[in-house]
Image (tube, rainbow, N blue to C red; front, side, top):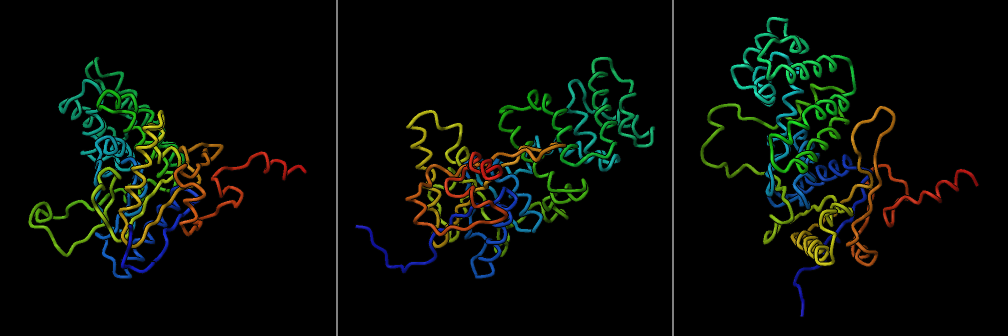
Length: 354
């Protein structure tokens, strides 16, 4: 016999977002709204199926100066492969950035600190021209790789959209990634996310500024007793959230392929486990539950199209389950795409011709 002494509050809210950027903005706005209503950040949590699902949200939170801690995976900006790719971009923005030069040069096979220093001196002697790296006369074993890097920088001198620049750097870095790190496919997803985030920006400098997440400003910031007055929003994978509760919970990316994960739908047993995960996520909320899913997922920059797919609401959010939610839409969404979350292409084509 289930019972409760509490009276009914706000029903769970199912939020259809036009795309990931609208989802990020909705979460950030609602977090701040609850904080203004007296709910501290530490009593609010954002849950997701996989660690990389919070990539773009982390950038939005940093841009708005909303502190957060992530459980179940590294913070996006702290991952080594993300730092590697940003190193290339920082050299493009500031060719005098010695730290970034040292990082990216030593990613190349056969290059250590000594050869990296010689290559940097060569660039310094040529007026900090990144493309001059192609004429560096180093050991024969590294010459080909250094020239490729010089060609990359020479090509990026031309004015190209920021997302296209990130795409070119990512294509150069991808073979190195597979050589340097384990679990390359998961890391590649982070880099794809970085490219999609870059598509929102018009300048490289503003992009790099937003990705700088409050480094320590003095030696006293590096160690010491915890500040009990400082608060932060909790970001967590569902697995890491088991046994925890918060007053306000956001479950993001509640779309098929994310939840359930497209890597865990090969058998009824796997799907059942994914359903249990969704149950765990939604029952972490004491007072307010928001379940969000983006209608569009973008797949990077393209010169001629905005390359995206239309997502489908999680199969676990059946019509019967949805009757228990209030529903709302964030951003420009075609009403015909709602309901099942599919775009009825045949009907839309007929409407144009008949």
